[in-house]
Every structure is written in C-alpha cells, then in structure tokens.
Image (spheres, rainbow, N blue to C red):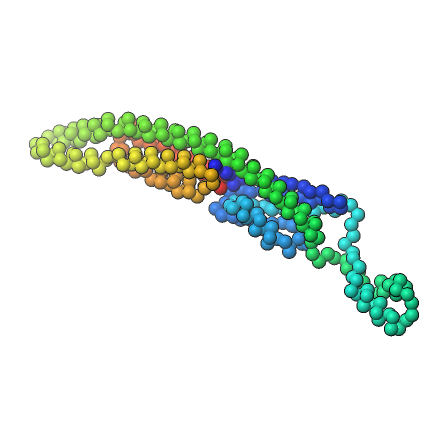
Length: 285
C-alpha cells in the first residue's frame, strides 16, 4: 500500500526526575535528509539513533528532536571515588585518624567532585529508545493515513484516464476516415489527375504512420501496472514515478499522431489528469 512521506510522531516518557520528549516530523524528499537536534550530553548516541530512524523511515526530509527536561531534584555532581581514595592514602602517611576523619579532609581537596556527566545513564537511554519507538510508530501511522488519501486520488485519476482512453478508441475510426477525406479533398482541389492505385498506396502508408493501436495497448498496460504497483505490500514511489513517465510518453505520442481536433482535446484532458498524478507523486514514499 502507498505511504506518504509527510508525517508527524511524538512521544513523552516521564522518569522520576526527568521528562523525555521525542518528536519526529517528515516532508517529501528524493532521499533521506535527516536533521537531528538534541542536548550535547546525548550526542554520543546520535549515530545509533540516526540508524534506527533511517531504517524505519527510508526517505523524506526528517526532523528529529530530543528534549530532556529536569522535573525533580537532580544533581549533576558526583563524588570522584578514585581521587578521594588517593587523597586518603596520602593523608595516612602524614597524619593519624580514622577513615571518616580522613575522608572529611579529603573531600575538601580539589577535584573530589565531578560536576558534569560524561555519559548517558543506561536506564535513561533505554527510556529514550522506548520513546523513539513509539514516535516512529506514530509517524508511520500518520504516513499510512496520508498514503490512503493519495491512493484514493490516484485511483480516481486512473479511472478518468481509462475513461479518456476509451474515448480515444471510440474516436479512432472516425479520425482515420476524416484524415482520408481531408487528403482526398486536398488532391481534388489541386485539379490534377493522379494514379488511383498509387494514391491509395500512399494513403495507406500515411494512415499507418498515424496508427495509434500500439500506443493505446501500451497505455492500457501502463495504467494497469500502476494500479498493481499501488496494491503491492511495499510503498514504492520511485517505481510509480517511472510508470507515470511511461504513461506520459504514450499520451504524448497519441497526441502527436492524432491529427484530429476532437482526439487532441481528449489528449489534453489526459495530460491534465497525469500532471495531477505527478504532483501528488512527489509525496509518495
């Protein structure tokens, strides 16, 4: 089924002291264009998060935002155990006292507290991954809903193109007769005698050049192939784009061969329907 590249997904996880919000927005793009915004502390996880998003969303201009809000009492300062123990060992060599007294002295010395986090807490990162999974599910549901709307529009356009192709077929016989009559009148207006057999041979050759039977068959096949591709399990916007190009090629050839105003008017309508399909095709994943 068809999926759109337009989507939005958001999920919030509440931890004891933090609120984590993951937000995903996507628009159409020829390939994956991922922009990530997150606090500096979490940059070490950016590559992994990007891989997860890329494998799920495949294409589109995607904005990924990670917000972390402190909602409770939390300190970023931690005791640097290695430094404290080192100070205590040194103090024992120059002063007497129990461990508690030595620790009190050591804590007053430089570098015994670490004021910045060096890495993301594993439980916190697990919560981020959980929020990302829910946000991805939400944006994919959004894309599927938008894809359903696109599929209905494409189906309507294809139905119109089939109907217009039937009109082309209905006009084809009278078109060739009109071309024959026009050529015969042109020859008669010249007021010259012509070899009837030679004229008939040339006329048949000319009419064969205007024959659109192959184009009509190929156009019918392309329209059916487009519908079959829409119904496939995977959304394949690029493939549908290629098929629409082939549809356009056949419509253009019919128009160039028509040489008959009523048929050319129908071809203009076909081009209009196809142009609307191509416009919407830019949004298909």
